[in-house]
Image 1: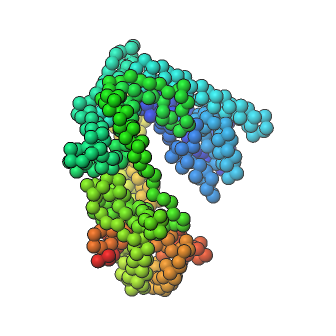
Image 2 (image 1 turned 90 degrees about the horizontal axis):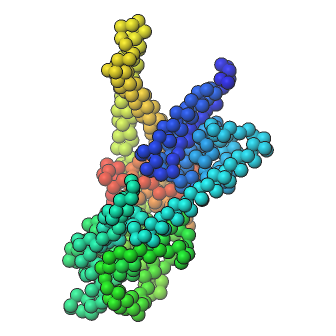
Image 3 (image 1 turned 180 degrees about the vertical axis):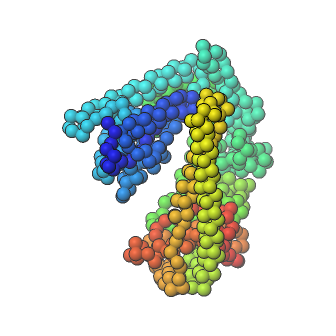
Length: 556
C-alpha cells in the first residue's frame, strides 16, 4: 500500500552484500538485490536516500567498511535514515548474537532493520522468529565453511596446491584437468631457488671470510650484494628467519597452519603436501641445530611505560623509515633509532640514533619559540586562508558548470521524449535508445558531482580568524606545551606537527597549515573550551609542499 500523500516519507538505506569478490564480479546477486530493494521501497512510498554495497565480504563479522559506514550513519544524531532494507537477514549478519546487537543498536536511535523477503513485525513472536532465522543462517554458514575446509584438506592430501602465494623459490603450475577445474602443484622456480640455497649455505658455512652467519648478517650480506627479494625489495630479519625454518624447502609443505580466524590448528588438521625439495634434510637439520644453539632473542623492543612524544611521526631523514624506540643499559637510556637500520643493518640505511629526551626537548622548544607566536601564526595562516577563498570561488564556478550540464542534458532528454510522443521518433530505434541512455548518464553524473562539490564546499567553510583568536591560541598552546608528564603535551604537539625527520646534521619539523587552522578554530570553539587542543593526529600529505610549514634544526 502506498503512503498517503500528506504523510512524511520514511527514509530508507539499502544494504547489499555478497560473500566473495568472485561473486561480486560474476554473480548477478548485487544487481538483483538492488533491483528488488528499490522496487520494494518504491511500492511502499519510502524515500531511498543511500545505498551501501559490500562486494566480497563475509557476514560472520563486522569488519566491513560499508557496513560500518552504514552503522555510523544510522547511529548518529540525527540519523541519516529511518530504516535499513536488506534482501534477507543473512545479508546483514550470519551471526545471531551480532545481528541482535546491531539491530538493538540501531533501534536505540529509532532506526529499524527490515528484510524484503522475510518481513517481520515488532511483537515478541516476530522477534523470536527473526532470532531463529539468524541461528539457522549462522548454522548454515558454519556448515558451508566446514565443507569448504574438508574439500581443501582433501585437495592438499592429494598433493595439490590450494591457492595463495607460493613460498619463495617455488611457482604454481597446472598439474591436471578435472572437468572444469585445473588442479595445480608447486614446482621449483629456478630464478629464486638459488637464493634459497645461498641463504642456507651462508647460515651453515658463511661467505668464506668468516664462519656461519646469523639471520641479521645474512640479510646484510644479501642486501649489500644487490640480491633482492622476489618483489624487488630488500631483505629483512623476519624474511630470512622464515626461510631458514620453513619445512617446505625439504619437500614437506604443511597446509592448514594459518587459518583466517587465527584459531590454533589442531595437529590432526595439518596436512603435509609433498613438494620438490630445494634443500636436503641434512643441511636443514644442521641449520636448525645451529639456530637453536645460538638461541637468538628476536623479541621486539621493550615496551616503556607512558606515551612517547614522537613515535608514529618521527622518521629517518635518509631512508624515510620510521624511527622506533630502542633502549640501552637495561632500559636506563632510550633512543630514537631508524627501524630499517635495526632490521637490515647499515646496508639498509646508515641513519643516526638520537637520545629520546634530547629530540623531544628540541622539537617541543622549537615549536614553542618559533611557531607559537602571534606574528608567526599570522604569517603561516594568511596564505592558507587566501587559498581557501580562491578554492571556494573556483568550486562555486565548477558547481555552476555542473548544474548547467545537468540542465542541458535534461532539456535534450525532454526534446527526445517530445519527439517520441508526437511520433517523429521511434522508441524502438537502437540508436535512439543509446542516445537517451547516454544523456541520462550525463545528467545523473553531473547532478551527483554537483551535490558532492556542494557538500565539500559546505564542509570547507570556516569561521573568521581574528588576531585576538591567534593571540589567545598561541598563549594557551605555549602553556600546554610546558606541561611535563601530562597528556596535553603529546596531543598538542601532534596537532601542530605531523612529521619529524631526523637527518645526519639537522631535524626537520613539518605540519599541515590546514590542520593548524582547524586546530586553532577548535581550540577557540565552545566545544573545545574545556579540553584545549583536540587529541587527534591529522593526516600527513608529504607530496603537498604548499600545505606544510617545515622548520629545521641544524647541528643536532
